Length: 264
Ligand code: TA6
Image (cartoon, rainbow, N blue to C red; front, side):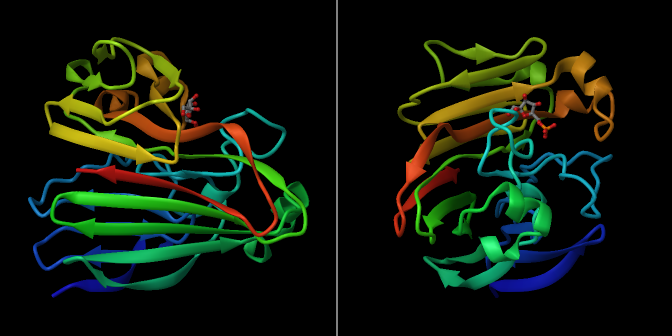
């Protein structure tokens, strides 16, 4: 039976989605953060650090942080934006196309005082998470509900679980194959077509629409050791490949933008 149930991840309230064929995903309301995704084959596909905070005191290290309205330190606001450290609400949820979906909502009125001062623009974000067989779809919609245009950047900062980052091969972000042999923090603009991630953990096809760019990140040994919320050797167990909109896009009053992401 398809199910959408409430659960806890550490101290964080979360929603668990499950399909009749055994796929499941867990999304915390803090950040609308997908922290786990297993396909119908039972294989976990998301990295989550053993040292991640799971109490809302700082961003979750792993899964899929939702980045909005600022990417990294490219602006004067909160690093990687406030969406990943805000409490979202569940909108609609149910069954669709033989799978299950849930929609998470964040509006300006949901923000704490610090963030509503930082970002005085009325907006509505909807993150849709949909699960079917061995496929995960995520869509991010940004709507301007205020009277003036605002610019934003966005990304789905996905931490893909791998057996060993040294064996990872990424196709589709650059000419030729990308291997990761040490720290890598690279931006690829105007990515066309699908990105393919091959690793000891299997092969994933990553499709993005609306997000023009992709970011590939692994901290390597040295930077990982400097991260308080990551074990020293955990950098070997993931690669971030992130569909992104890096050059801020202006959205007019009443208008919206949507980015779609499909992992299969
Ligand atoms: O997307 C890559 C990146 O911007 C890197 O520069 C790296 O620092 C990473 O994100 C993680 O950022 P965080 O704020 O979560 O530590």
